[in-house]
Image 1: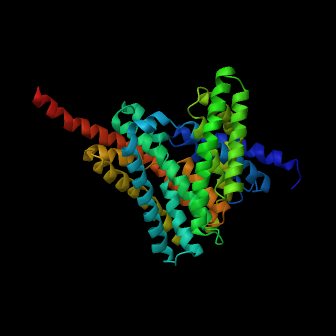
Image 2 (image 1 turned 90 degrees about the vertical axis):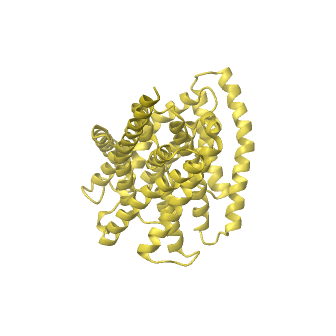
Image 3 (image 1 turned 90 degrees about the horizontal axis):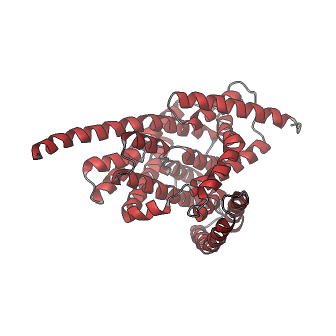
Length: 400
């Protein structure tokens, strides 16, 4: 490929991603879905205007690292601590049940495989994709219903944050295990060592950034150094500890999420991600998705994948919420609020593809899951809250 032709590819990707993203937003679905479809349309499967290249793959990798850094910056540690053990327990169930459900689904369709085989890790990775939760749609729905600040709303948000952390840890462990030559004890040890390193070094870095934030508030040097921390942690995670680079980027965001200018850093990162790296990442997923591999078996898998992913989240989170002494109505609301999927599911799938665990054919079920969960979750939440208010009204009237 001639060096200058990459400019043509980037031009086409940016224009198509934004046009399709705007169209998606108009019909009330996540903008990222439109950007993925844009990549599918301009890619080899449809129009063939853009081909996947090493350069685009590297730009997409920067995009996913920035996305996870921003996600870490958006973490609210105060909300996390306020809901405490309840949110942690709900998040654990919300990871474990889909993980097991996804693994069983794959083996039920493609056959059961022995422990340690490539098919076994592929089955487990399907479960890992299901663990991810994205509550951006849920947050918007709760805002419109005026329920975001309630105990149910706060629990959903906190559990989703913990859910993402646990999901990334599971992702790191499975990718390390799938390497073949890596032993389980070694993977576990490296994962533990990384988080110990991140805690110790992160505390020191946090103090340095907090001092710099007070001395040079709202200046560009803070986001620039934040970006350097993000890239540095991503490198250290992958190179020194053998775990996913996105884990390092996410941890870098968590380190800085409590400083005064964390929102300012996130805004600057969002400009870079929104303008170039984000569209290239999501469009690259569409570019890698090949429709010629879609078969009857894959369609059957996609249907099962969507049903199992949605139902397992509801079952896991709802039953654990009930054990945490929520009533059945609120427990079901928490389960439904946790079933949306978004960017994190795509990021996990992308890491599976780059690690050679899954093929690009499995992006189709993931995209469909994001689309369907984003549509049905606000509808179900509205029905549940409306039904709950109707039930409460007669009791209130009777008491008066």
